[in-house]
Image 1 (cartoon, rainbow, N blue to C red):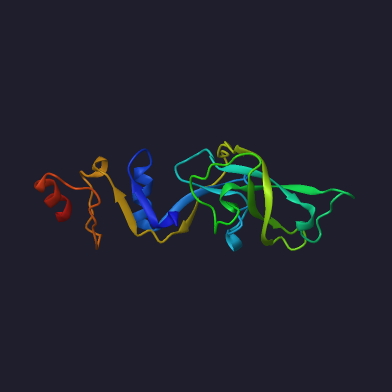
Image 2: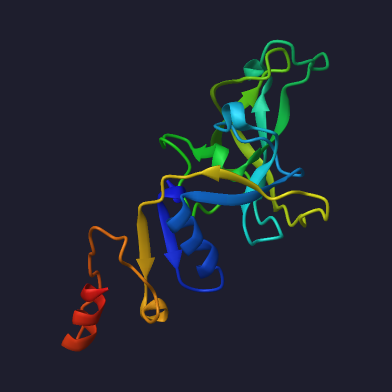
Amino acid sequence: GDDAISQFWGRWRNSELDKFRSGRVRYWRCAQCPTRHDDGARAAGGREVEFPETRCYGRHLVVEISAEHAPPGMHLADGQASFSVTVSEEDARRVGELGFLQGTVWTVGMPIETRVRSPLTGGFGPWVGGRLSNFRKCGARMPDAAPWEARPVDCFVLLLTRDGSHGLDLSMLTHIFLADQVWDPAVEHQLVAR
């Protein structure tokens, strides 16, 4: 998953290198985002937003689902044909796919599948089909009093570009794979010697 890879470039490269070296990731929870389906025991509600980001950019999808798929304990008005649920983008998938695909383009009216939380047990039921009726970005800011939490990750891949090629100690690595061709033999030798 995303925790297995650190991307050492751009704005957050120091926090990504820290994740790679320490095996821990710091985050805060966005209280405005729906609870993720796979959070399980560690779920305190909301999306994890990784350090040092102080704004949540998660996407919420509003899915219209047929009343026949309502979980036990959900109260629907007499004659109500459907109900709406709001889910995180990662907890929805196109019909027929195994899971969420990064880069999915959502359009209003498209058929999608998600899981619905039972009001009785708090657990999620099986995947059910519905139609996307709305979507929006979260945009919530980190509250001033919110603490940074940390959890262990199994981060074993560090992606580098020439941007981070100087002044970096890579002595802890066991394998190196050069994805781009290095035209200067001196630069290649320096990279492998690190």
